[in-house]
Image (cartoon, rainbow, N blue to C red; front, side, top):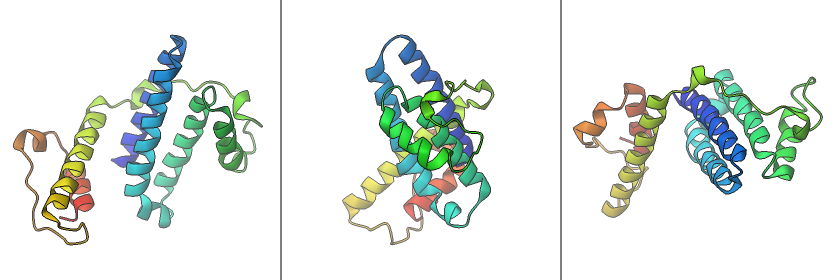
Length: 174
């Protein structure tokens, strides 16, 4: 579910940043990239850490493709950082890659992988995790201490798949 979410979120980023740059709104494009990088590092990478350690191909491939696309999208706004990502990650792994991110074509949105429902459900999942962490902090219960249950309103719970409920349980150590 994390791979599907990241793939959809990456394509959404391409779509939204493209629209912003075409309307000369670089500030909003930068905000979108910043939020995406935060989601990528503080949710996907953190939740997939064990998968990376195990060398799971789907997790590694999803992250690699995301970083390649992110470098292309970032290039007009943060050219040096995008070039460093490209030179460190893409050029060594792909002999057919362009010698610079600035010599590549702009990514094209793949509408078939956009999943509004999954993105919305993942946003709800992250919100519930943040609320769960806040409740633990308020009760002074550390995350390392397992809980026997967590209560979520039925309206929110109905929007979540079993996979996403599992992510919440794992993240909150329930």
